[in-house]
Length: 269
Ligand SMILES: Nc1nc2c(ncn2[C@@H]2O[C@H](COP(=O)(O)OP(=O)(O)OP(=O)(O)O)[C@@H](O)[C@H]2O)c(=O)[nH]1
Ligand SMILES: [Mg+2]
Image 1: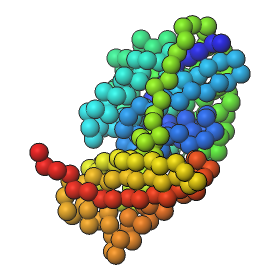
Image 2: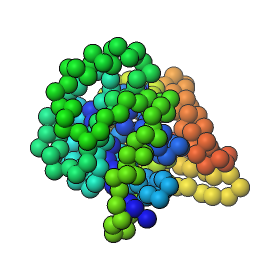
Image 3: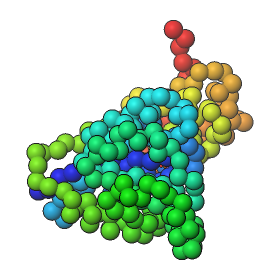
Image 4: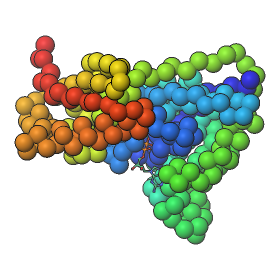
């Protein structure tokens, strides 16, 4: 079988995680309207015809990455890749390419993807691409909608054509515990504003499998004020977060689950 590591890279919010989910045809990476949603590399492999593709979804670039670790992690993802897909939102200015300029020339195969074409008409697309002076640095360009799964197959065909027989490649699989914590983090990103989602940590403490699945998670916060916001009036907010997360995990496991969320104040060391 042919194999390739394929990294998804680009500015924050451009749709990298949405595209990964579209390739895999199920949810494996969380998505939100907020910036800096993905904060560590997510690997997932897909057997596409005669090719094993290991996708690496990376944290997006941002003018001042909230955390330098995000940028470091994203660059590690690029290092592993045989092929890199750079994803830009066609509606935005094409910025932050400087963050990867030094790494880009080392990459064997580079694809440029303009995403969210469902939001613009063809004239806009044509005018937009005239602004771009880095098109010739890429091997292929695609215009897609990750959300509507438009032109996704074309990218898979390109990857297939550019993959070779090589040593076995392994996926660094995300554990169930971490993935379920991510789903709750997605709920927090959806419902809680400003910086709080970036300041709390979700941990899955326990998963018990019987007729139904019981999951216990902790949301660890830094201040009483954050705890109060996460709880909401009469616990309404934590309930909303819990319901969202439970329904998402039920969709993934195709099973009934019980989810218990606890908000904990981080111990100051
Ligand atoms: N209309 C439209 N929206 C999209 C499309 N792809 C992604 N989005 C939306 O764009 C937002 C960001 O998507 P993500 O997949 O989280 O973006 P990302 O590049 O992974 O972001 P980071 O993890 O922060 O780097 C979400 O609200 C998505 O629903 C698309 O093709 N069309
Ligand atoms: Mg992401």
